[in-house]
Amino acid sequence: MRAVLAFAFVVLLSAGCSDYIPVNDDFGTSALRPTGDIPPEFSEFNNYDPAANTLLADQLCATRYLQLEEKSMPAAPGELLAWRGRCDPYRIRPDIYSLSEHFSP
Image 1 (cartoon, helix red, strand yellow):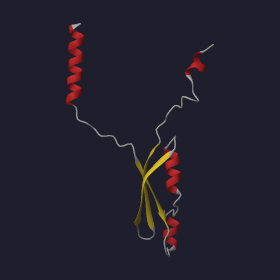
Image 2: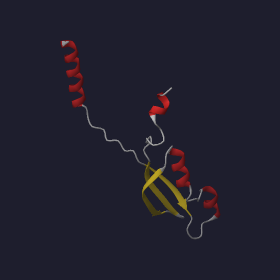
Image 3: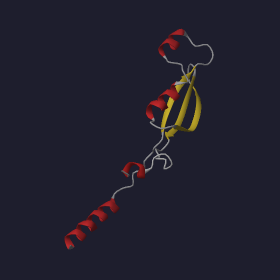
Image 4: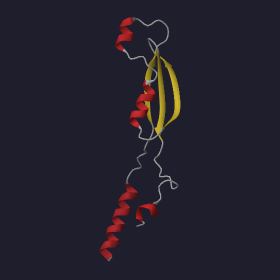
């Protein structure tokens, strides 16, 4: 019994000495938007599509994407759209998924 308590004390002590590592659960996406006259060599090289942000967010999230911030920054040529957001946390809805349905005969 003493060995278990000593082991638990050592584990708690080592956890208390570790550094706190902050976790960021948001991510960013960016896309180019054409503005003004863009030379053809730039338009062929770059994908000017503001819908790329939505496509990237849909590919990264299994649930709904929650947009937190949208920035528009000048770029040469065009404009850079930057989004910051996070995926909606997954929740089991109790009105749809009932455990009694699964365990009853």
